Image 1: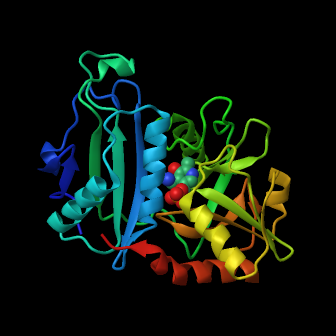
Image 2: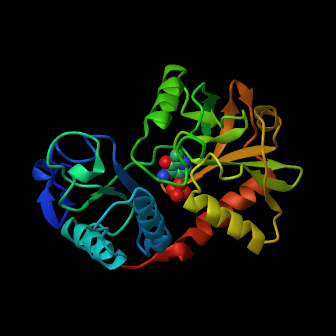
Length: 291
Ligand code: PMP
């Protein structure tokens, strides 16, 4: 299906795609000053909707946005957008909340006097990653922000950090850029979290310098439920190169094996990793919330 004629929700109502716009005075243009969530819709509903809305609210509060729309308002806007587009399955929603339109150009939040601006963009989007074959990645020279610079817990639109990592992966002909933290430990890929399987146990980096991903959290809870040992630790590249399995997690791509890191081949056949990926693909529908 094409996205040419989709309706997009901006601030308080729906517009056809060609008329869905924000002002050149909007905070997102004048400073990358916005927060966002990527949601996924299955026939059963939106995966972990409440957790996504909580993270959006917390990011906006940290950035001292005013007039933050309530969860109920956002849910209604999502439902209205999906209904208007006849979408109820395999849809991606890009939820963006900008600080809003400013009275003049500039980055000072006080220039904004009209409250925040919600954008609900629902699209039919092909999956970025090939879950069957897995993805190939390179480690990039671009470090992931740590709390010392910009807290990775804020899911903000200032994505240049990740975009530079993605450009390095593109130049190398790989699927994604692996980012280390400021101490040289694994942080995450440019758009998803990372896990490692070794000797029948599962490990993932602390959430210091990665987004505390909602899929990451679901995988950790699922492992605990099934008595699979999962621990947050500092992990080096060398440990990743020699892992029994490495996989990436994110709302859109679910769980995807990483089959190559900096030219080192990683198996995607580890039995525990296969079990986790299979369990998740079954259980993700149980995480959906209807609107
Ligand atoms: N890390 C980054 C940098 C991301 O942009 C995303 C996707 N929003 C993720 C991880 C995965 O997070 P989630 O599981 O909440 O989709």
